[in-house]
Image 1 (cartoon, helix red, strand yellow):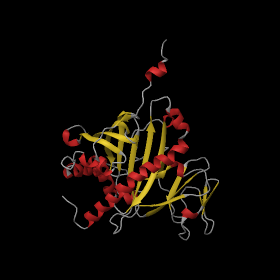
Image 2: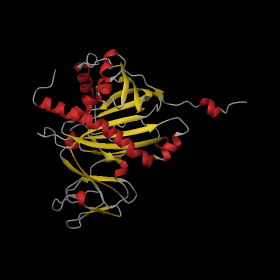
Image 3: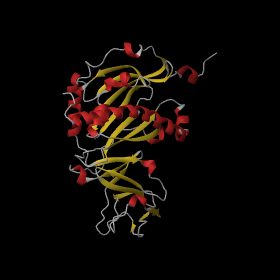
Image 4: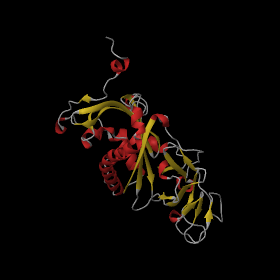
Length: 335
């Protein structure tokens, strides 16, 4: 009897991991050269951002009667949807008497200040000038030329992603007492994965770095832990396309084509004595498996789980980013 084609071709993405005990894994401190990380950080800092800042999740600014407010680089910003769903944004202070526009109401796409009822439709009004904004379908961005100080770009540098209809996305946000470079430096150190996050990663091996002449990225072979000894092995490549962004592309293995974008958005003005930075991380997962259609259908239930997974990792990584900033700001950081 012939076996159905679907049965013959199906293989499980899970493997049985045989990683050594945590204390017996190979040390990675010799490979994690501070100079290699510093040079990657320097290259990232030199790349243009066009003054664009990731503000949050696109779906966080829905068709509702409340705007989305956030302070970015020391500037109050307010974002909302016009009646046709288009993104609008501008300064967060009312041009009348400075009331916080984040506390306004949105009525038929118009922002109504709760203090005296001043209406803003997203166009210039009495000295209030809108900010350029961009909605890429996963994240929303705002361009702050006064804060960025770079030649502006028409749109943010958004890395390639899977097609929206073929993917499930989730956005996680957390805030730490550090600067964007501390977040980026953390992501440009893949060697810490199995040591610092043993609950998530095993068998991690950095297979290529810019120092090896293998391009601008860090290639990593790693197994994601699922349950017990069950793991999913993949190859991931970390690159920094801008000064506040690190992207992990899954290039081989289960979920090839998926991306994790980590954006470091400063909340305080440059040079602040107590800097605060938001980590805005977008996970865009895809798979060629036929069963992935069920995952897309269950996306509303999956997103909280995806955010919880990111949150556990960033609980640890933000603590290190904060420590890195503390050491840098007091002249005690090695190197």
